[in-house]
Image (cartoon, rainbow, N blue to C red; front, side, top):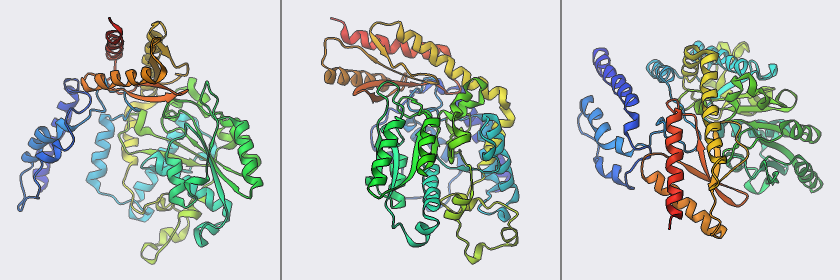
Length: 477
């Protein structure tokens, strides 16, 4: 493709994306295709000769679009937001156009130094601890960040021996029933083993980790000869946005020499709003690592996860491998950061460009307005649910997620939950909105996560009216 061809087709692609954003409400929120339908429409063999790009765009509309679930749709309330925005898309385009491989400072100094600066900007916007300044890195996901934190904790606890000689001690890792599954996966990958992951009790009302139970569990493990390696405290759990008491958990970690990893993948970016800085309680005093995702709720399209460590030495010590072909004068000088030593893979994309673009376009005020809009809409929804005698509102909803369930007083719990799930499936099948569910207290809850850039009060109201009507239709004689 020549530069002139790229210009022509590039304009077509940008126009296509802009048109998609303009008409996104015309699509069913969740894809309506059956399994294998997209695959069946694709040729079984690649073309022998090259084809024009017009054919790609035509098949995008004809074949792929029916199989797209529209995460940016204003009636997408499933999972957490996966915000995309114009500045982020353009930043990603610039990154792709430059084609930078930023594994070393020497392979593109601007890639490294922009990342250092923009992650520090983010730390300032969120008012994170001073110890994190200069100690941040962009990962592809919070799952990768959790794995990196476990590896760093192993390095620190074992004095470097686990990476050199393998794991010989018996390490234990502590989560709650609400912790993201990536922590168990990290334990498996690192060789600690899923059996070494302890699930700590939670408060039955708030679903937050119980520090007293954590203390007891660690004491029992230590008495049995295990080494408490890492505790994961979550600020905004995936299920219900429960918030673990980080200061109290931090005291337990400090007393037992365990690494404290704080997972604020969804909720952390909300601290851009001063009134939500309580989300950072305990970080400065206790957190060894902290992660949040601009690619969820901060208008930066996937993938862009920010990870900070209070001390980079265990992280770099665990992950630094320097073969001859990567040796260079800048690295040898010790004056630069090589982010390859802060992550699992060697290669790195220029992700900082899109985060830089977003922060510069919106500024702190624009980012705060977006977060506050989602929270405000969620509180409106919570008020409607609470006022409706046919529904139970889960009491914890400080951010953009609201959990609730219909009340089925004439049905046993199992049948009531099955009815709730059946209604949710019917609503999702309609294409008019998209919900997910979770369980709390043994009961099925519906989840509405509000935060898509285009979501307005009218979308939330229409979704609630459809949910309430579906429930009433189920109970009508």
